[in-house]
Amino acid sequence: MRRGHVPERTCAGCGAHDAKASMLRVVRTPAKVVDVDPTGRASGRGAYVHRSAACIENALTRGKLAKALRAGVGQETAGRLREFGEGE
Image (cartoon, rainbow, N blue to C red):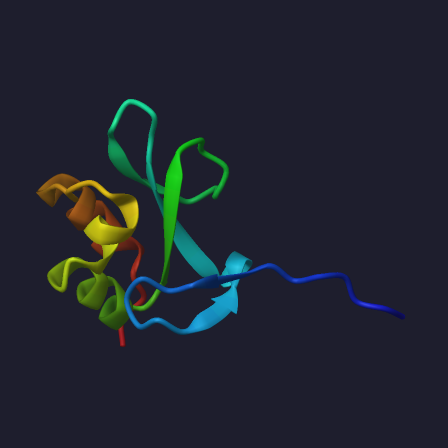
């Protein structure tokens, strides 16, 4: 049986490629609001990060997530994003 195409995305935290389904999407909506998108379907500019606490912290502290979204990531959004991270 033939497997279909598996979409891959690049993690904003570590730069590694992985399956889109295994990553968490952060979106900047057309209203310029940055928020976590657990469904991966919200409209707007998106960036992906692994669900690990290390990748999330790396993306936030080094400014990689803000650069990918072309918008600042507020404290509230950063807190929500950290809640999605799995401990390492």
